[in-house]
Length: 290
Image (cartoon, rainbow, N blue to C red; front, side, top):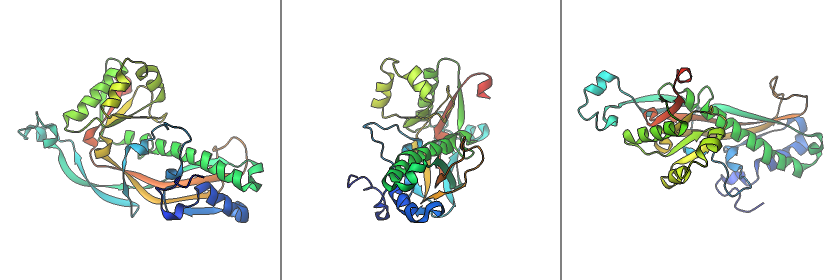
């Protein structure tokens, strides 16, 4: 293991999550439960030069010292409120309504089953946890932060932008809307099907977006044909409780297709949406836009 693998983690993370779990499992077996004073997703370092950008990597973080926090926010005005602001037509944000709201952290879980051969192989078990359970947690995070019950796509104040033309027309319109409210077209979340079948190969589009500084997170956790674009760096914070657990546990029904020894990884995160006004969800026009 390279000496700088966990350089950005707390001093208590000198061991990888998998190594700490495997060492505990060697003595505790099916009673194993290991707690970590950091979010273990941070310990996953993909073995490739250009890893896919996860949703959490688009967001700045705020440490959540409690399960629920208060935060400032701005909301879109009513038509009557906007009409009363002289500069609204030039600077839409001049009419935004300031306020305070609350946000919470929630458990995000992922599961793996242990092959019987790994229960007596400490090194193999450590590698399996580090390379498979942590990846599953990253996927669970993408799901929770996008289409989960508390995810961005379910935030009631994020504007939906139906598009009549093609998918590219829709996302370019959304990027324009971001800057029409005085923000920056920082990033967007798209489905891989749209990225590879529509965006990739479309002339200089991806190069133009990269030159503009617009990041792209590809995830299956947003429906094909939709894109969430916004100034994520300003609009949203990832609430990070800074704690995790990996334990042997009984999985919920339907988790696996066959019985076996199961391990659960759990992190605690949430979303603080300060500026829903600076996020736009593109959807195809018609019934799917409702």
